Image (tube, rainbow, N blue to C red; front, side):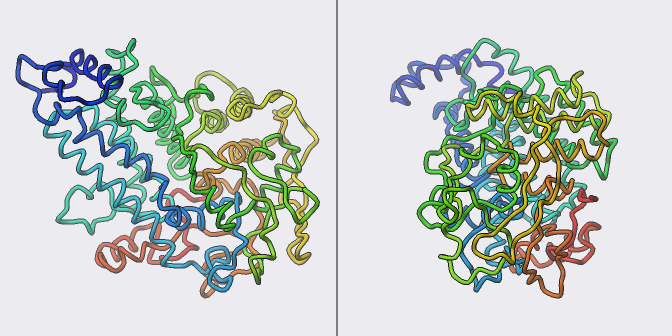
Length: 529
């Protein structure tokens, strides 16, 4: 049996259309009786036993609730390390992640959420999908796993991935080079499975995913294929410094696929609607996060029209936008609470079309075939896509600006934190610039466009060194393990796994990229910058 869905697709689509308009009813068996008796009880439950787990998974790649978990899953690490944000709150007596005294109790949540709320549910879905022959759901599972777990690997390095399904040997980690190889294999398998199914459903707005896909893709096979290709492109750039040949192969395969990559900023962003975005609570109700100083330096310096959408004017400097520098002395929350709040957020955005165009721009810079355009073409399309995403006009006036530069940072609460602008990079593409300056221009604009997705921004900062950020003022890392000038590189392995899986963690610490140095100053496999 190749796939039940494939053989009886027409019957399933008819049922789903009815279900979407009337809901699941006791009349299901009358509506969808299979004369060949291949539909079992799981199918009669509208694929719920398999598909229902995907809604949970999509809410936990970046966790929606509880909010305090979001805060320690990402906000008090990647969102800050990326330069996007900084808390005014002096947690743990102001010696914490922000000053490189990494808090084990915080830093385990990125791991725990991924395994408990993503890998666990997908493992259960896979077992059911395998038993029922639901190939499309197995493919969807692979895409979701890579979407979630590349984030986890980019935090810690080695992770449990290929051996996760073997419950008798859960201690087995994959070193990062091996886990990236598995990511590419899973994406390729998923794309190969979904492509012929997408062709069969070319004129349909309904797929087996539709009832369970809470993202704006709404179950579209084509959109999930394009996202998988775009994710493949993202990961290809990630390894471009350490394995350029493999990177080129994966990137060109992604862009060259018949359905291509994400390209329409009005329909293709991988995002999940959420009016109660966790950052709104952390920002407005708890007053635990504010604008980061690099965002002020770059966005204000560029007179960037996205500034007013991303942040609110401060109360500390006459309505100006003011960010907080990372790793400074904060005695009391009131000292910096009046700096710029974040703007309200209604979507969890995990990949933007703008990012994809910037990836293609950098690919061209590397000499890859990214679809025939020049680096400048894709760079300007990336800015245009970001403007379109946010409902802004006149992107050409912005990307043709050749004079604006990031500005010096001035802390109105403490002049000891003042620092000159970290770069003089301008906006307008300059074809005569050296390659590395072009790369800085691409990554700086990509960093702006990806806001507020701090995990990806932090990963790209470590890979490229861009945008240029301000170093911490106070470095509390034990024995100077984390260099002030080279910034934090990773989080140590999750304390929860250290406690419950000591043999596995010990082996992971011997991976080449860790070399026994399980601390925040150890560069990951792909981080050769």
